[in-house]
Picture 1: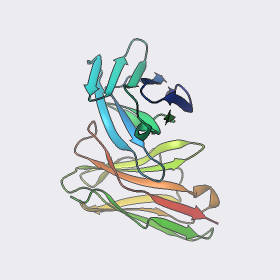
Picture 2: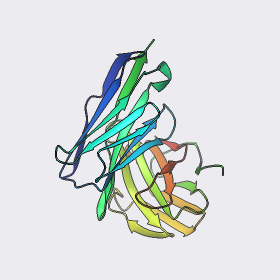
Picture 3: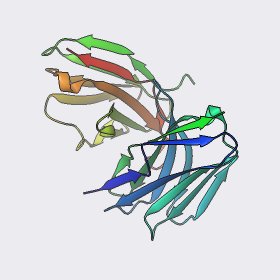
Picture 4: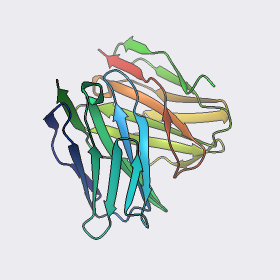
Length: 111
Length: 113
């Protein structure tokens, strides 16, 4: 069955450092991968989308990589700030396949 | 646009009662998704519609759950009869296309006693 794992349930880092979150998947051939941010009591908010033929995408302090050989995506937040503290979800989609979300990683950026 | 609108925001009901959750997608979005989120199972896709037609309902847990989209601006998710294990946050989301950004509503927090 399809499985998505995100590196850890929680990640604590110091302000100013780079946060790196991992999304690994099995039994899936995604055409694209998305990253969302979710704050407590709110719905997920889209951050970035990367397609299977793309290696890397950037948006301001965010960077996503996608390695279909390793079946892994890395999500980086550079110069992290306390306001970046939230749960980050990866999601996979593909033609003829269900759209599925990972369990999420709760990031805490400590001042 | 006001974004995806969901109602009610909170619902407390007793086991056996019927629950109806409502969603108004963003105007012009052809896809509408219903999700359920719990601590144990995370965010699960229940069903999604394209142009008001249900495309994939394989995530609907059982026959007690049903969803409809009578027109492009309104969808309902109904649970009848409700059970305590249905307690969760239910999200509605909409998008222009299945591979594009999904815009989520604020969710309905359901508690079945």
